[in-house]
Length: 193
View 1 (spheres, rainbow, N blue to C red):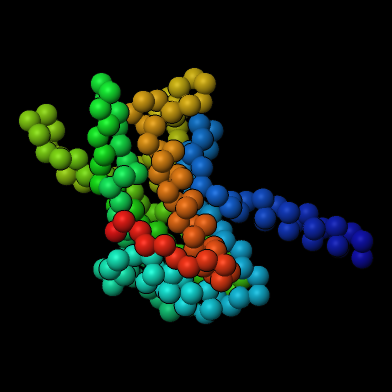
View 2 (cartoon, rainbow, N blue to C red):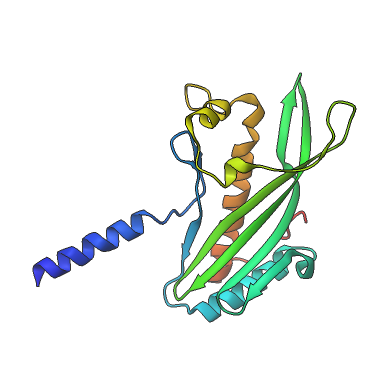
């Protein structure tokens, strides 16, 4: 009996270890694939409905934000912000509009919060054609070449990629806001959408 209990505890710790609670972007791992918000005692149906309520309160036009949903199991949204992607060149900071897609998956007691796509908009000029471009480093593992492009040897971001930290903080803020809302601790705050 002791061996069975010990085995179950080891399996539980392995499963729990693989579920991140916060987004990060590191030289070794790249972007966190997704985070899991634990809400023991709540059904998938309750979590789904509360997430819809959170979206309705967080975004200015929730009917435009929600791209897809499957009752009690899945919601996909597209949000937009103009202050999370930026580049500083010759002392001037230029901000880029950023669109992101988040997929929510619901199970009894937990919500999977997955950033599935990030794109930024560059204004056309005589130097660039402009338009929306996908940030692939949010959705794929980093190889050594890409890692060296994004990170300095000391593990900090290179100048052209310093806004990644701002993006990570923004997505963590959204996840924490949803977590608090699901717990009934806080009301949603309106996004810049």
